[in-house]
Amino acid sequence: MPYRSRSRLVVVGNGMASLKLLEEVEAGCFDITVIGAEPEPAYNRVLLSSVLAGDTSLDDIRFRDRAWYAGRCMTLLTGDPVTALRPARNEVVLKSGQRLGYDRLVLATGSEAIRLPVPGANLAGVLTFRDLGDVSALQAIPAGTAAVVIGGGLLGIEAAYGLARRGLDVTLIHLMPHLMERQLDPVASGMLKDALVAKGIRVLTEASTECIEARDGHAEAIVLKDGRRLPASLVVMAVGVRPAQSLAATSGIDTGRGIKVDDKLETNWPGVYALGECAEHRGQWYGLVEPAYDQARVLARYLSGLPARYEGTLIATSLKVSGVPVYSIGDFDGRDAEVIALHDRAAGTYRKLVVRDGRMVGAVLFGDTADALWYRDLVTRRTPVESLRAALPFGRAYAEAA
Image (cartoon, rainbow, N blue to C red; front, side):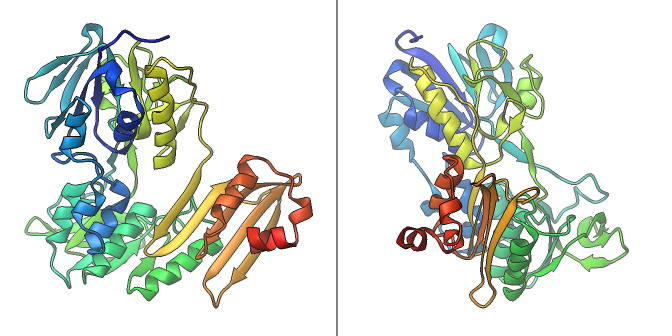
């Protein structure tokens, strides 16, 4: 139901999910205060690797300046993180000691980088790759430095690419048999590995870290569990992220893998909501931008008094990894289904389409993603594709002409 005019809305977090909510919500209905832990207002975290590589400037990844918030009568506080939530008092406490009351509270605290629990993980020269502070630290490392990036997911690959572009001697190591195993199948992953090697990055898979050796308190080398020793004055841990939920967990708010929310994005405390990378909905945690934006749209409608429910997001990953476009959606594993594949090694392109019961259920594209949205529509709308089967791997234009 509609909430009373000029209700106090406090949003904890000023990342991409938070900003999307602020863009969508009826700002005139609320006195809005936004609290960001970082000194900078919201920026495009997806493009951090481009900033590290020098392909993009900091100005290019900023979304909204402070004047935008002021123009919508929002109070933006940055560099002063929330240290305590007191839902029983409808109050948050900031590091500076300031206390803010609220009628509605939205937690958009995002996620935090994981550090491997191995000896040497906290040495000087061991960094993460998650925010602008990390990028600034990495930009200060001189060219020619031996660097090892741990983690062959998107963050690790992007960190390795950015460092290689800056002239560092980079080795990328990954625990699993192939890179980006959650987004790509083994064929596409192999093509990605070849593309990284062509850019001067050494890639080791099935490589598990035993420890990080030190000299005078600074990282000197990584030792793998198989005994190999990799010299490294810089070690970047990019092994994943976890929901930033400690504030909620210590405040009586239900948590699991993330902050638990219902279809209204509401926690077990009435009037307290969560969205984005910190939220867990129906047992599902999303670490991607698109679900966060879906959640922001739903929550904005609900807070504005309009009917809205969040029922989950079909996972689709559309990325440009180290300059190579990749895309995946749905069930692309292919088990108990028909797989249609088109692999052009010379052109460096690959398409894998998965069909079950006459309908597409998943896809992987590498090198050419021009038809990604068409394939997405076929999957999400459960369109029968039997009549398109022969033309399906060649794309929309070919299929429609046929």
